[in-house]
Image (cartoon, rainbow, N blue to C red; front, side, top):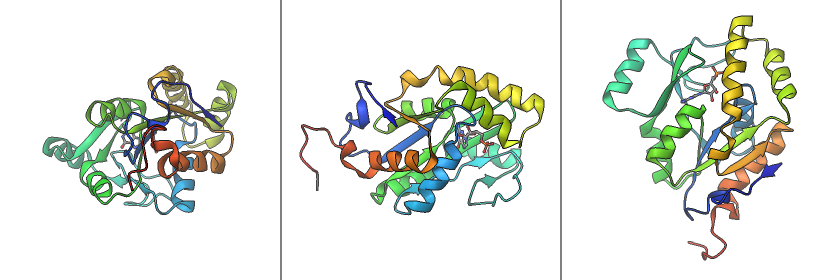
Amino acid sequence: MIETGHPADAGTRSGRSRLIVLAGPTAVGKGTVAAAVRETHPEVWISVSATTRAPRPGEENGVHYWFVSDEEFDAMVEKGDLLEWAVVHRAARYGTPRGPVDLALASGQPAMLEIDLQGARQVRETMPEALFVFLKPPSWEELVRRLVGRGTEDEAERERRLETARHELAAESEFDVTIVNHEVHAAADELVALMVGPGLRHPDQPPSD
Ligand code: 5GP
């Protein structure tokens, strides 16, 4: 379900933006929605972030993340190779490699970043023409259920993430569009429609091609 109403509804600030920044509270299912987009919409390019956290079972280097050491991450920051980066859950660093994003946008491909709120705020500073989408859980109870159900974090880590999530939910109004993640494929389709559908063109603006 899409909730709009923000003045910058559906990216109408720019008729040509093909970059979507997807953020939202922890455990809302951003990664799962991004994976569904990857699976069903290969025309959408999805950024692969660099992270200093260890891979979870089944995660592949270069597919889910670029798993790097602290030193490698430091080097990327120093060289200015990251479009944005943040320490997430006070645990590890995550960042978006800049070069691949530039390449995807230059080629005219619709592109998507799935990042945390701190990262989204940084991108808003440097690429305000992007469309900022907030993925929201159907309810707080559902968010807690998803976080606990995932079972990949220990008790202390879960508490940390819930605390972060409480703050993150409050940031919804900073975003252009909200999508409620009732069902992953529906949310993925809504997201893609914002990128490739008529949603990115201002109603008063003629098609550009
Ligand atoms: P996880 O460790 O569960 O894969 O991801 C933890 C959090 O890091 C998620 O909220 C995810 O959106 C965020 N994240 C993943 N990649 C990036 C990135 O490149 N930059 C930022 N700022 N956050 C990221």
